[in-house]
Image (cartoon, rainbow, N blue to C red; front, side, top):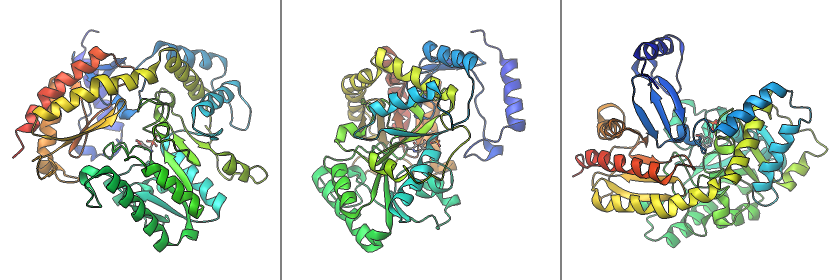
Length: 449
Ligand code: PLP
């Protein structure tokens, strides 16, 4: 593609004049003008091409512009571009069937939304109506979306400005051995103590006041902390004991990211409700939803469900989901993601950790990995403080700039970089990205002591 800096400047000027960006001080940002994208790469108007190790916001699980999904959207647009949610529409029925066939256990009914936050809002609404209780437990080090209830459930600094304190949310600590909230030294200890802490929290809050517990099966943006063996099964047992609805949020971890269709499969747990979005159709058209157990669905057999959205199960989004799931089956994308994790990314990152003083821990699975960057491997002091900004965040900014200079677009959150390429990235692409990461980590190393 021919560079066209003038066109890029016009795109940028209109953006700066009229687009109000998420999570940003509008006067302090300088968004890159993107000219195009394909597969694992995107490029700007100045002739720079980047390997995307972020999958957008961890959602383009089959990469950009997959021709079969693009064609399916085009075909659906020509046939029936939209239709209201109260009707049965072929492509909506088919998307629901394909999703329900892949979700664990008896999660066989699908409520469609436009994205992850709305899925979380509706899961909580369902749990409250099903139990007749109000409170919801959620974990620190979590992200559940930016709408009212979802942001209140979120356990990271993005909540602070919107925390009304009135959403009935009770927060607890989930396991994270590397920075253990429980002073544990083994995974077994971490798991047992985290479960005891959860049960104590429930006892002191009053079990009969708690409608639901929400957890990311593998927390994503907060740091990809794979739960230790036994933890999620223990959570399931505690929820059963107290009649609490177990919600697993698989908005980021679902649809192949962990090397299974859903991360819950790794841990042999079946939640009562599961939220999804992102990878369901690689985000080509906005789509999310809640997969609902038979028992909770039955609550709304005779009693109307008091929630809905104009675009619930939008035909274009559902056509993209049907095509995406088909592509993932035909091209064995989920198996490939597992292979990349076990044989390519995992071993390479562990090798980087040995060589780079800034890499404190490597953790993850599938195409879902985090490098916890530290000032010092012994003390585990994070390379930048929690929620650092400006000068305090300079080491991470320098790391990010070095990666981009090497043609790698990195995912950065606080003191971590996540390796989250498309689930169908080739081995060669992943290795190219890992080489650029290696070079950028040398810049992070300069900030260790
Ligand atoms: N839940 C999890 C685990 C997420 O990672 C996200 C988004 O990153 C959301 C919910 C919110 O999804 P959305 O941005 O589509 O509303």
